Length: 228
Image 1 (cartoon, one colour):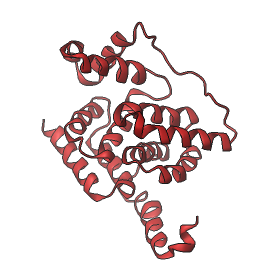
Image 2 (tube, one colour; image 1 turned 135 degrees about the vertical axis):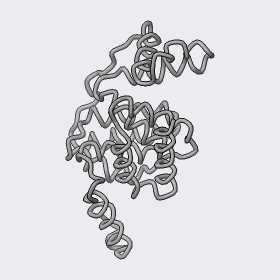
Image 3 (cartoon, one colour; image 1 turned 90 degrees about the horizontal axis):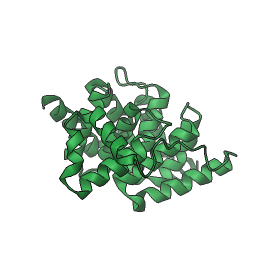
Image 4 (tube, helix red, strand yellow; image 1 turned 30 degrees about the vertical axis):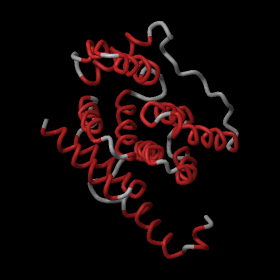
């Protein structure tokens, strides 16, 4: 790591905080696979391409499979847009190639262009409640949300629905300015079994990568979701 030579004092403190203090904080720990999934999603959310390049190999060594890593990147297209997602897809492919991981990976789609809308609506209803069965009818953006975001991506294999809600939470938390959506997806996470305690742990483990302001905002959003 070049920074160990050029910036030894910074590296000493950051490495201690990010790789020792935070992961081992009593009451804030996560399984390594979950922690790395959250970190990868948070780094995509905040646009941290160089840090993502450092962390992806570590994630692959800690039970995050190539399919899981790719699914995290693919889902980012809906929450950050293609413009911000593409650099992460490209560098993921580069790292996979360096590691001898054959591309393309096996297909994970479970929907077709013909049934993506009803399948997406069903997933929305499973996560957020029966009222979502009619929400897609309120306008073309909501129809796209159901068919594209949920029908194209949430229905894919490789990640469970609770894991997909986890990474969505991290995308929204890390990019900032998405507080209303973060409250909604805090509720979605809780509906999928990712309770308040779990989400606070996720925020804590992502804090070194997204900073204190967005972490504190996320904690406030989780609290608001619990109140509502």
